[in-house]
Length: 292
Image 1 (cartoon, one colour):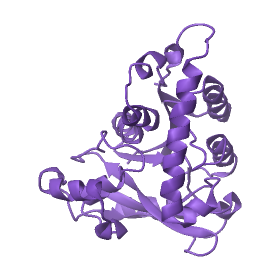
Image 2 (cartoon, helix red, strand yellow; image 1 turned 90 degrees about the vertical axis):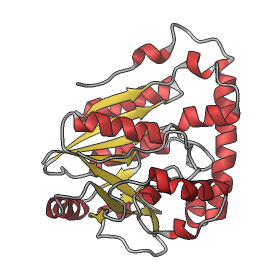
Image 3 (cartoon, helix red, strand yellow; image 1 turned 90 degrees about the horizontal axis):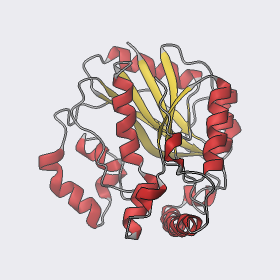
Image 4 (spheres, helix red, strand yellow; image 1 turned 180 degrees about the vertical axis):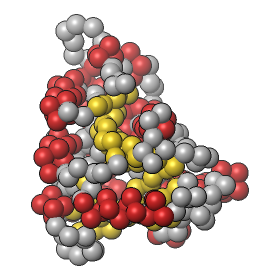
């Protein structure tokens, strides 16, 4: 069994995130994460809007000897987007990036982990994850429990439990060849974009009690969109989510929603402003790279 681990590196969105959290957390992962037997690690750069940040990420990955792929930020495409929602979806692009990882991964292995960029896996977490995947050979989907960390150094300790330094978070999702559904690419960041997949897989969780128009729409569509593997998902291992740079938002759902919404509005405005500035050379889309 070949396991392909992808980490999706996207744009930081202060105030929801700390400035340069992706760069800091990538450096921490590359320095501290152990080798994961049976796994190939790769990275996907997901529409990084600022060329200098993109280049620093590329430099870190290549210096560590890993392969990377990219969904480029294309100025010419972004300029034609008319609404805030269109721009926010383009800049975050999470579910399309997860699907790209799945497609790339199945070209090289039969199990793909399309994980968020801030995810760290310990030896213990990996051993449990790979054992559960190996023991459940007929399962097409796995949830991987995740805890948010207050301090990255806690990633180097034992398996976390929910306390003042660790918080439960929505699990990551692993997929095996033969999986029948993909992430919904129409859903933007903060609109239950990963939870929608969990609901279509029949994974129970706090979202079963959530309310809101977008959640009601997901429930109403389940009869037509749910997986053939509904209710058959297995759990495997655990991971941690490194520091977001905003522990207050991590701990409080209402504050997290407010910080996310404010951050997205500010980020779209900053990208819009940056495009009004002259740029030396050609469009940065030509820098798109996909390692074979």
